Length: 208
Length: 215
Ligand SMILES: [Zn+2]
Image (cartoon, rainbow over all chains, first blue to last red):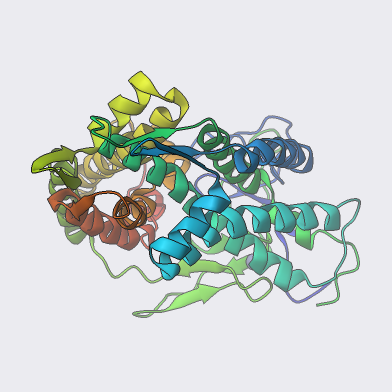
């Protein structure tokens, strides 16, 4: 056994909600004596749930990118913007640094979440692998930490729409893409929350 | 480690104050006292186990009160002013939400209302309520369920993202109109800073700080 004992080896179980260290009594529906939440050795059905949420998010991400998210009507000129064309417009006419921020928030971050969570899920199948464990654990924390910044474009579209709702010559209107995008963000957040990072370290041949 | 054995069939807390489990990899540690500015990290996965809490209960309550004031301002003051042909249009957060609900997309309206208004408000009110009683060394009524609630709404407050969103909107709208940030944005920026400070505070310590009353 390695120098660092893990909870299941000591017959302990940590509450997911309040962090209390409890004895693992093997009861099926044990509850945390402190906060009353259900105690689980690992998040229940972590892999299946995370896969389901991740796939649903990915399916919604396709229309989110293909459909326009915003229509601007300026002096009779109708212009439908997708997420990407909005970034390009911001780059060309506005400020390149903000374009980079929007590009990161609405394209790089969601893509990274799909890749990272997908990789994590594949790597913990069966008994898991010892490959790059620390790095995978770090990637998971990064993805959890930056995930919600993807809401940026949803707020931008809402704000711009509200600004010009009394439209004089010009008009801004949100299009369905933004709804799909908002739902994608929520689903990817739920996916990273339902993944249990402890699975990364659940492997029989511990050699650290 | 020899822990006292417990009778089967019931769950006992095991040496609450001395043991600590890493939430990311399930490694068990003995708690050690942290000095000022110390951060305990898991040696296996490098996740943060515990931070030294330098903010006391009084300071936290003051912080919550400050946040509530700023929160009201952020919602009452207009966020952006748009000038066009000598006319000015101002918009507030609730103007945006109501407009999205009525005319465009209810999904987006719900997302914005929840992440920018209801969840942050809920979090602050809950914290304030818990803190008022905590200062007297007591658990507030509804302590258990409120602590669980705090755990679940934590990741769903997005005021920081909104501040950046306002910035991007202003630059984008500049292509067509004359837009200027309004007082509400600055209130939101302050709110974002407060929320960042709060995210460094582990409210879970209330569980140990305030022991359950015998009643
Ligand atoms: Zn760890």
